[in-house]
Image (tube, rainbow, N blue to C red; front, side, top):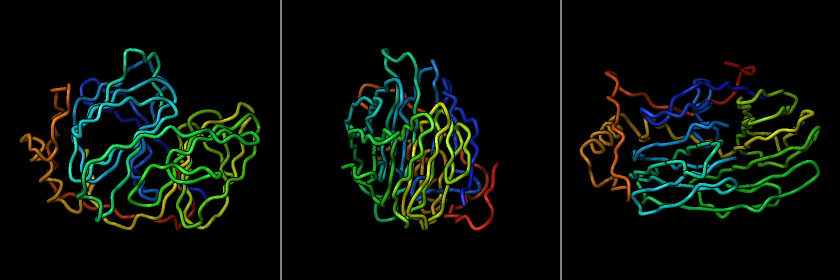
Length: 303
């Protein structure tokens, strides 16, 4: 049973915002495994220019189809995000970073994904990992596995919970059956073309989600082929509060992180070569509520 989540338009990055299509979090599905945030953007000639901003309690995963972004963080890392190469930044207790598309970028197109950290990793050290996966080529399929294992390919990227992330390019009319971990939740984000996931057709930008159980996923591409991002992971059972760029166990943890960012605390450090700061918005005048996994127990919802 495939649950289909439609994207909503969201401005990303403050004043010079880049419009993105967001499918996670969704009121019908806060998580897929520990994946808690999925932004899909482009192709666009508008560049990305996100000033230094903070994170707690998450890991960010950057994956591009086109363009190039310079990443700088308070761990001292300066790195490029390029098509077909994954950058995973772990915030742990606190990190700050900036994301700016380079002058070589004519068109920007990709996904920005967040992973919720479990309690044992939420207060850990900041970290940065990079990997350029080799392609896996099969009949009608070209894949790059950037997190986890699929199609005999295993990424060396370390994650706090079991996860899967892969780009799948299907040729025109291709039909592919993937062996997957039956203990995982899975989701397919359609970037371009047309595809049917286990007999449920997806439109571009939609996220098709399945609960644990299936050991195979069937993908059928349309006449023009398809490109999609496959996500998966062990069900994430922690209750967390997620607000702005922070994730924590409760309202008090979020409030403390916001106050420390606004005060220039050493908790988040300094981003080398970029002295800008993205101010935090005011907290809402209510207590922030936690989010928990919502398994799919009813017929698929489209909203």
